[in-house]
Image (cartoon, rainbow, N blue to C red; front, side, top):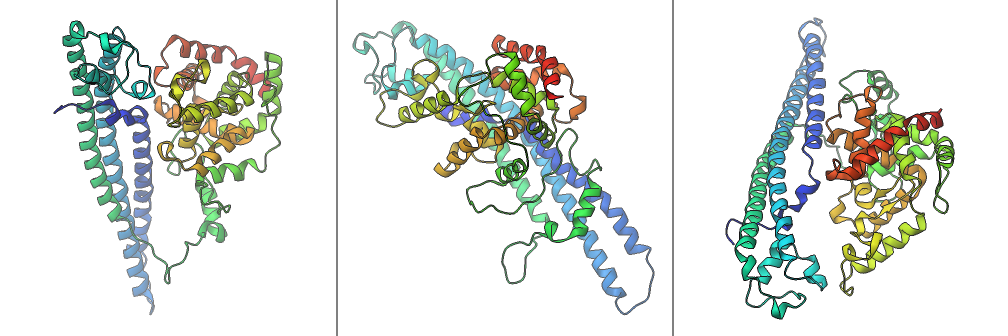
Amino acid sequence: MSGLSHRKDVEFLEECNPPLVERNAAEFRRLRDLLVQVEEPARRAETRTQWQSDGSHTYTSRLAEARQLVTHMAEGYDKAASALNAYALALATAKTHYRDGKRSERALAALIGTKGTAITKVAQEAEPMRQWEDMRATTGVFDWMAEVTMDVDDIRDEANRLHDGAGGSFQLAKTTEQEARSTCVHALQQAYELLPDFKMQGGGSRPDLYAAMADIRREAAEARTSPLTHLPGSGPKREMTGPLGNAEMSPELRDIRMRVAGLPEADDNYWDPPGNDKERAEWISHNKAILRAAAQRSGLPEELVAGIAWKEIGGQYGIIDDGVDTARGLADTFLSPVTPENLFSRAGGAPDETSFGPIAIQVRRGAEVLGYDPAHLTGDQRDLVEESLQDPKQNAFIAAGFLAQIKAEAGYGDVPADQLTDAQMREIAARYNGGPYWESDKAQNYGNDFGDNLGKVKDAMR
């Protein structure tokens, strides 16, 4: 099996997105530019100020230290930006190899399907390469229908070719990403070492200088209009907030909960989702303050967030989402004879792909927006994510955060909210619905329907 990898080795690439890596690189470069801008006034203060005093040498040495500090920080952020940009390029190449492997794998699965049907949970969960390795072996470990009489000789050559093609592509994807990640991490470590290590004497927690000093808050407010304080097309920088007493709560979720606390009560649709355009318009109108605040926080047009809400709030009852979540959770245990993906009808799917809330958001997407690792959610974190998605106000903010992520993935991250075109919003809507398959007819129809409803959405938001 030398030189081959399986999909499981590289399936994390499915969720990797080079434009988002580039967006983070742009954030580091923005900080570099901000620091470079500070360097010139600092140099003038050091070299053009002439005065005599017993403390003048302290003034001069402190300014020199400050200039050196700014220079090192700028160099560190620049190095980090370059490392992330290089990784993004390699990641795009790795994803191309991964897609090639998936194409070969799909063809292999179709070929295998002509010879047998997986009937056990172990066989259902196995990827096509593993299934073929079992089928061609003398003694298999999977349970296939009519395996005793199965004759695979007539597909062996083609199946081997597809198996090796998929494994070779997955191996290329694996090595490309691993080598690039190793180089990137090394460069980020070097960049980190260029940054100062601020320590408090005697240890203790870090003071909240922003909250404690009015002058810093005033300076921050004045700087908000500078293009160097935030990337083009993004929302305003988050205010710093204190802990709410829950160690499992992420800073992003904490900020959202602080913001929604001052907003009007939401109109929920858990028991009775809107069934026609009139009821949708009433729901949007009642919740327009929430939708507007969510859009502003994420740097989005309010009609984009409201338009997605228009599409989603007429979906299934909230109690059905809870039932689907329960069924998938039970099927995900070792006692279940089938996998969650093989449950009947719409119940089929991975547990973390269950959607919650008025603007239907999957658990894994909500976790990403809130700053959690979807692959390693603790029980408490998952409960927090589901609880937040089921609250209409928090749900709107999480949906807006996900739409902002899609906006960046689509290459529109630098486009300000008031310059995003209807066509671009249609594409974002299609990506919201279809994910990697946003160009499919189903997702395109979703985007077109979103665009067709924009007039009614804008009227409801007035």
